[in-house]
Length: 421
Image 1 (cartoon, rainbow, N blue to C red):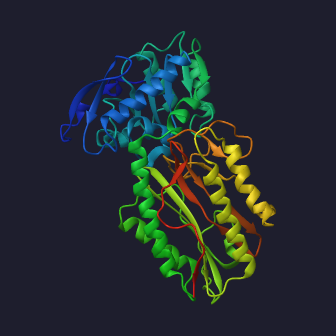
Image 2 (image 1 turned 45 degrees about the vertical axis):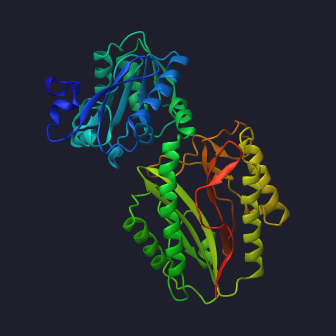
Image 3 (image 1 turned 180 degrees about the horizontal axis):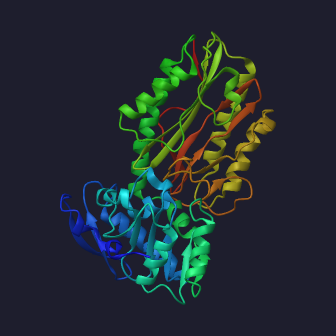
């Protein structure tokens, strides 16, 4: 239970050292949404109101009295709040009527006025049982009996303990899986979101070029990776959901591995898969380059994967399906004789990310048997690649946005074979 020092309170009353103003911005539902507007917000107030309205509309459709937002990507999307401290309990209680309440670790609550627009928080102390704090907040909001509460049953962060606590302490409520509400909202990006992702893509392009310059005979993948990381951070990149994957020689066949101390040979290949993040919004790019004289099989595999990317981009447009895009790409690698080495889905949604991932594949993926229609504003990373164990891994990718007429690349680096002689 919350004691007197841990009541829900207006964050403005406790942050005299922070400069901001409170504004009331009407939403489509007619509710005046209190907002703290300040320079640290990644997006405009109107963008956050749009997201709030989208989520409220979905809640109404599902007949929810409240929604518990638990995943760090979802919390950032909804409120603007950013922290790598999501390993500790964070939760936004979104009632169907009234202002959201942000449950945040006491150690981190001062991040709220820096990053989030919400004005009400409840502290969670390190000695609290966090789900019990949520129970208390729900009771104070009048959501403790006979209510329909949406929870993220498919997320990483809504635990068995949390669910059992809610069911035990507030047994009069119904707890339903509402994971899809935030996922569906995040699936289609706004113009503001896409613009931030373009900034991430520029960082990736810079890092990719720097890595290519550093890839010389005698250098190791570890050394090349150091240059890539340095370039990302020096130019304003933030910590990524996954590290850059930079591999050389036969180690290129190993999925999701990094580096290696062995020096590059005179005739070798180097695999790059790099992401960058701004305001937790990610773009990524995969390329494979060749040092010296590449083997014929390497070049044929590269041509097959590049062709797969092109076939997918020709297929992706509003009204097409992920299944169709994956099928088009897979047909190219299969025809070229590399079908058995092309094991992965064509791609996955990309946008808001925290470790342990830089993608949003749980939301939607470009894969077989995914038949939801593609619509403008969806964003994907498409990394088809061929992995031949103990010999090579060759891949090329694009981060793309679905447009009104097709799709558009976020990177400016051509998708083509590069040979450094």
